[in-house]
Length: 452
Image 1 (tube, rainbow, N blue to C red):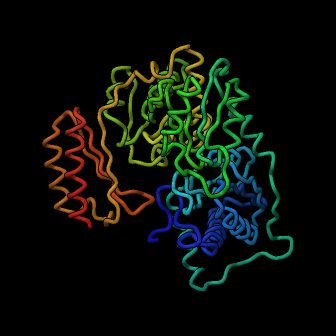
Image 2: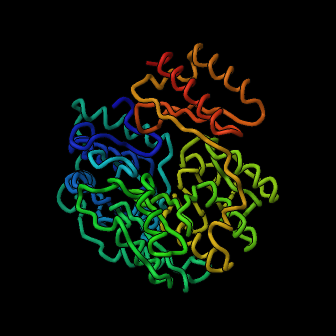
C-alpha cells in the first residue's frame, strides 16, 4: 500500500490491503502514540468507534475495538453512523480519540480507518506519521507494553449517539424547513437513518431513496457519485430539491426542482451569502481548493466575498480555516465545513442548511445557486500511472505549459495525484466545452505517455 496514511486516513481493499491485523495494529499504535503525546495523562482514556454499513466494517470494527481495549482504552461503540457524527460525538463526549471505519465514496470492497483527535479534529500529519512508524516497529517483532487486570479497556455500546447527533443538527439550524419537500439519496450508507430523521424533525416532507443498506450495496449506482436516480426522483415527486450523500455522509451534493445538479461550489456560494447576511461569515471569507470552478471565484469577487484557496483535500481546507479563524470552507465534491457546528465535512448538516436557506428566502434552489455561473470543466481520471512523478516529469511539464498557452486567461489546467487511488486527475476549464474536452484529452494522453 506504500505509505499507509493518505489524505483521508488509511484505505484499501478490505481483507486484502486493509486486513484485521493492520486494523488491530494501527489501533494499538494510535493508543500508544497518543499516550506518549500526553493525551491520556491523568485520566482513563476513552475512544468513540463508528462505521458505515459495509460488510467488512463488521470484522474491522471488532479488530479496532480489540486493539484499543488491549491498549487500555475504554471504547464507546456507536455502530453505523456518519463520519461527522463520530467526529461530533468524540468532542461532545469528551473522548480522547475517535475512529471511523469507512471508505467514503469508494466501492463496497474497499474500507478505511480514520482517526480523530480529542475534540473531533483530524489527527495532525506528524501524529499519523508517528502511528505508522510505531506500527511498523511492532509489526516486525518489538513487543507491546500491555496492561493487565483492571488496566485493560472496557467496551460498551453507546446507542444514545444517534439521538444526540440528530438533536445537535436540529439545534444549529437557523430556521425550520416547514413547507419543503425534499428527496434524500442516502447511498445505502451511514446516513440512511440519520438524515431522514433530521430532515423530518426539521419540518420537511421527506422522500428517501438509497436508504436500505445491506452491507453490500453502499454507493452502488446511487448517492453523490451517481446522481441520475436522485434527479429523476426529484422531478417525479415534484420536490423542491434533492440531497445526495456519499457512503459516510461527510459530503453533500444537491439537485434543484428541475433535476439539475448543484455542486459543492454552488452550495458554498449559497451558504457564504447566507452566512454573511447572518453575520457569521468570519473575515468575510470562504475557503475553497484549487479544484474550485473559476466561476465560483468570479462570483465571490462580484459579491464582495474574499476567497482563500488551498490544496485539494478537506483536511487542508480545515487547516486553513482553523489557522485564520474562518467559518466556512469546502470542496467542489461536496465536502462543506461549517466550523461553528462541525469539525469536519458534514453532508447532513450541509443539506439541512441549504434547505433552510431555500425555506427562509422563499426562493428556489436554482435561483439561489444562480449566483455563480460554472465555467465548462472537464475532469479525466488517468489510472495505473506513477502519480509520484507528476511534478518532476519534463515531458508532462511541457504539455501543461502548451495547454496553458492555448487557454490563455479564459481557462486553467490542474494535474493532481489522487490521495486515495493510483491515478492522476486531469482538470481543464475553458470558456468553451469543446476546447476544454480537447485540451483535457491531450493532457490525459500526455500523462499516460509520461507516467505510464
